[in-house]
Amino acid sequence: MNITLIAGARPNFMKIAPLIKAIKSAQADGKNILYRLVHTGQHYDKKMSGDFFEQLGIPAPDVNLKCGSGSQAEQTAAIMIKFENELLENRPTVVLVVGDVTSTMACTITAKKLCIDVVHVEAGIRSGDMSMPEEINRIVTDAICDHFFTTSELANIQLRKNGIEDSRIHFVGNTMIDTLYQNLDNLHKPGLWEENNLEKKNII
Picture 1 (cartoon, rainbow, N blue to C red):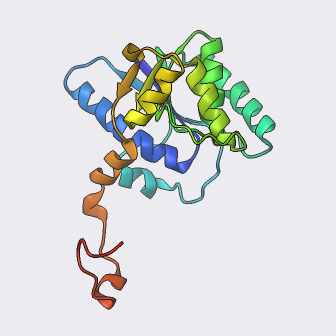
Picture 2 (picture 1 turned 45 degrees about the vertical axis):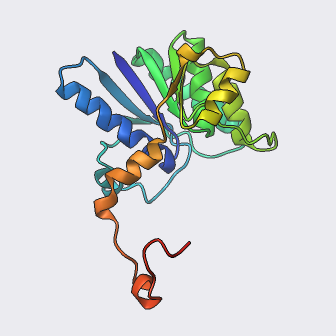
């Protein structure tokens, strides 16, 4: 199986990190799973240095499409054009998208038009606010993708309301929490802890 993983912004890489760790673990167990990490370049972030990838335990992207900023329409179009070329050159078994950024929706549409299955991680989340670009991205992505990896039972309920059968819904939990747990050893107590005599389980 060949998986193309999509990340459009720095938080997406934090969601992707535990997935890559799981893939590498499966590879070590002899599973025939390959992956390609595609950064759409939707957001330029100078903080995404080598240290960023090293700390998260993920490799740098195999390709950066460098789509850049622009209006919603300009950005969506740029991502779709460049990602289509990427898929034609490196066709995977499945495309995996995360979250609700423009790249999530644009890459889902592009893959489906090329008859490639799409998995959506963090599927089924809704705000009910159609003025949010992210809400539109979520709805469009969930309307056409093939498998739904969810973080909560509320998301499962939402998907069932939309007519998605249980066999396509996979309750896997929150990958951002996975990344948090995987980096607990890197956390340091801030100076304000001692300065304010803070006590464990006694603050908000």
